[in-house]
Image 1 (cartoon, rainbow, N blue to C red):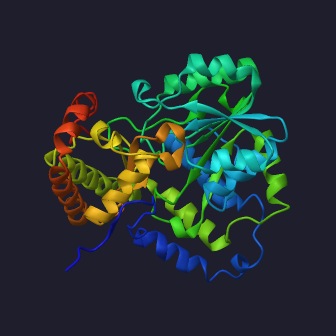
Image 2 (cartoon, rainbow, N blue to C red):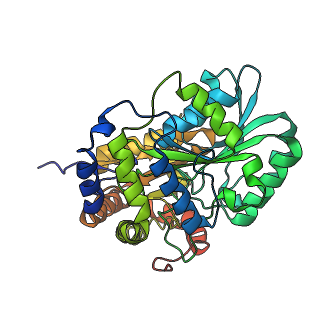
Length: 391
């Protein structure tokens, strides 16, 4: 019998939402007001919950009336922000590899994307000296940390340097911080808004999709610079409305109880990370251990790369599908700098992840790739946190 497919290609959470959040939604559905058209900026009660969460989580003070807007998912906010801020002839700096919405929406807005490579030697953070050489041309810099697809985490010092550059050269910054609560180390990832004066030039996007397993609910928010938020709202007012009111109420409940609700989700992804990475290491592929997100970003073996024409990443993922019945995302799908990598999303239970690692190991051994992978990855693995080196 042919082995069942194990799909680790899309970052779509498979965990159920916390039961208390579902109960909050059911209760909110009974409110007649929630079935009318929602306001564009979102309910003030929901925006206050966001501001309170930011105060608890990041020690950042926000004006819920002017510095918070609810979104139909963070992707919607990213698209509308780029349309609101950028136009013909503007330059938007976009990290590479990237979440494709940023370069795609830049082009749709008529602006020009400027690639900012995320290289392994820099721990997949932008080279700030290189960025500064292009800074005078920028209208907007798009960041995403913790990062999809690389799982890289930015430090507060990195954000300080970014804000200094933005204020010096007069460009705006948006940080997509939707993975801030999926971390496995002792120190939670910071917010760019923790930097003094960041609100003068920065916005931050958030989503409840990964944090609370609410991807299908399409609920997120944007916080920060009030001028940028007003510009984004001008686009929203001519395209869509705010999120469904009942979902906003449930989101507000989730944020108010985040301390108790996010821990179990985070621990489950840590178990999955540890099981999958340990399984690949046992199979002869010691991949880097992610410090955050629910992605594993792995470099392909040079031996395999030398056998292929065209996209090595795409060819490798096809082989995974054909030989192992495991689906992954080719790194080349996230930009030119993603070539030579593959991304696994930890969106399957631990037993399936172990099975996926076993299948991959059997294929690597039969294909003669395991020794090559081990040689290429061992030094990288030593520079990463060991499994279990977390809170």
